[in-house]
Image (cartoon, rainbow, N blue to C red; front, side, top):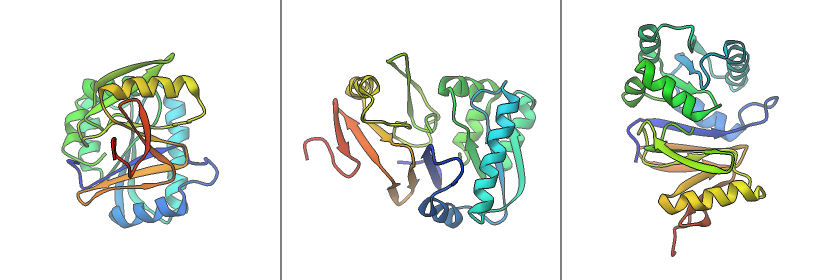
Length: 213
């Protein structure tokens, strides 16, 4: 199900509180000490925002008692060859949230997608990725790190988004993460923290359920 030893998919945690205790514990267990961390931008030209957000996530890691020997930020300020070098030697690759199709183009144009497929790296990590814009869904090729499709920021009370996800799920199952939730994927299987739903064939299930069962 996965081509990497450990994948984590997140959907908005409280910015002030940082990683929930259960998520922090999984990360401490999985990450080398001390390792190298590389943030990869979703919108590579927004340098100030990238710096601010990555500094905030570094605080989250510190408060979770996770330290890194090196932290880098990969965006349009970094030449492609250097970006690939930074990504290749990182122990933890953190794909920042934002416009997923813009990020996918950045990964392709810099050659980072090939590095990610051979390394560790929420939307773009699956074999197929889904973007919803103005109530319309768009499927596109993901990185193929895992054989699944993830949609963060799921709100079952948002009728327009739910309708778009139900429609898109006719072409393949979707794992929908509510905010304050996470998915962890290892060679041993899939586990979740928080509210995660499986949307398949136009229906919504708990992650443990399967269509028709």
